[in-house]
Length: 244
Image (cartoon, rainbow, N blue to C red):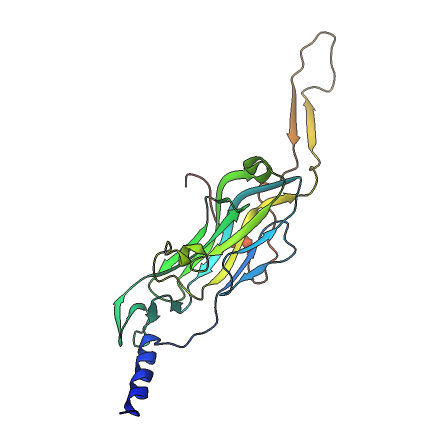
């Protein structure tokens, strides 16, 4: 009997963990003001950093791409299925097919999440959110939060408080990959404005009315700064503006 019990325990362990653990998440994140991208991994409960006290920090939106990996919390990619669809884990067996999902969100100054984020959901590995750019409400951090201090935190589904508190839905993906970046500007000092004055005629008569027009460029880059990712091309993004 003593020899049989260890064997049964081994079978139970295999049934409860049908597939071996592989690499964790590989999602690269970046925002203007950062010297280089950072990688989200299974040790992060939200990855954050301080960007100091710039003159102005502007957020216009978020962009990037996400792909589901082959592992999900509470589910397994069915090895007998040609498409390796996810099935719910059950004792000694696999249950019904389920969807796995992942997201990356941006939190500013430990206070509020930005209104746009990247999210992907699917019933099998390698489902991909194509490169997108979601433009949202413009946030000027110094005005939005009333402080020059600027801090950003990146949150990956299942790695933050949403997972610990049970707020995140079940079956979040354990090893997604992709890129996430903030569409915005880091301005350490005030930008240099430029302008143009146009006079409708090249001569002026006394007491004559001459139409004059002008244009002022305040020096802001509404397209945001280019992320320093390797292997990612922002020119292929599908752009979504508010209301679309």
